[in-house]
Image 1: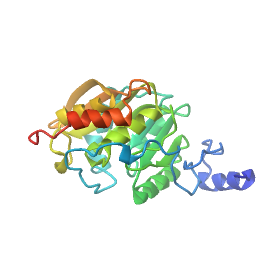
Image 2: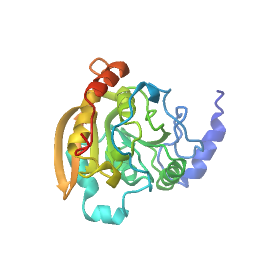
Image 3: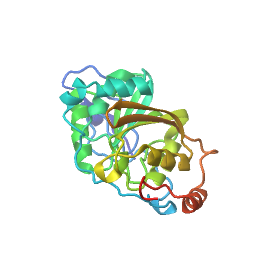
Length: 266
């Protein structure tokens, strides 16, 4: 694609409204920077959904772009608790899977700083539009807004130090495919951080044994699981590399022989 630099620079200046953040750097295909209009994937497709089995438990509906009011979440220290456990720091590349309208993205952006990167990823077009507007409004020049698929986050290969899933794991239609494709985007030593409630998936939570089973099937290794509030936990897993990760065929055979079932549905 031919790149015409001066119109892009002019658009960036208009949206900057006098801010000094650097937003004139070239953007990769499918990534939204401040002043760019289109939203799309940031990487080619990974393994297809039909290469993996469906989960053997209900999948909760996606009902809103945020879990609860931001002031309420700040008042109880949710973000601080998660970030302290995740050990997210300046310069890291962090992916918020299911970012919604950007509660975590807006707080991660100054935390990782100019040398870091935040991927705000979602699959719902309306939520991505809300997030894009917020990125522009708050001048988050280190944020890339990415449209993923239900089975594939569509993030660049080996680009992520920490991926977070906040109150959304139970909403993933294709968890085995998503986790498998997410591992491609993780850097060596990359960690997946999941905040959820210890209750049935149809009640917008994930029982801990079920979470452990599904992630272990894809090769993720649990590092810690911490109770952070009544019925709430933060689980941290080490992502597998391409060698230790099972192939889709091996994973499917393993789950056929020993499926991951919600407690009480064995």
